Amino acid sequence: MSENTLTSRQNSYKSHSINTTEGRARRHEVTLELRKAKKEDQLFKRRNINEDDVTSPLKEVNGQSPKQMTVDEIVMAMNSNDADRQFQGVQGARKMLSRERNPPIDLMIGHGIVPICVRFLQKFD
Image (cartoon, rainbow, N blue to C red):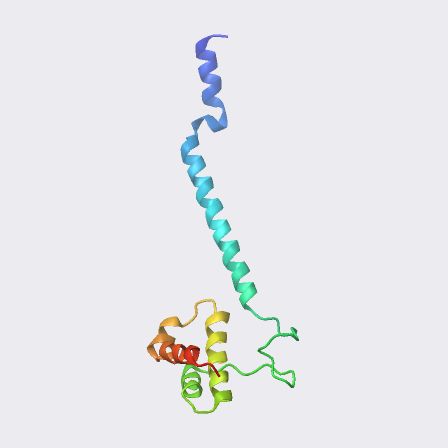
């Protein structure tokens, strides 16, 4: 076989024109994106609490799920003198931050919830 024939056969092969380094880098990027998307979906699924889960501490005693609190209600509950109300406020803040796909972290910080939580962590009762 002559060199011209070999060169023409190589040029006619479909993957010969593709740069292997570029293809490898593209496959790597796609794989990373797929892994990140899968990981994010798994975290989102894990954060969502199954409503049929009986062992969930978020369930009320009568089996009903507590209503979603607003940020203002959470702050008022956390600043109250009643320990049960404070617990409900902390629980509402935790649920809001853990369930949503894009949690309102800056909004919570802006309402001054972080120092209140630190104060609760310093209590021993």
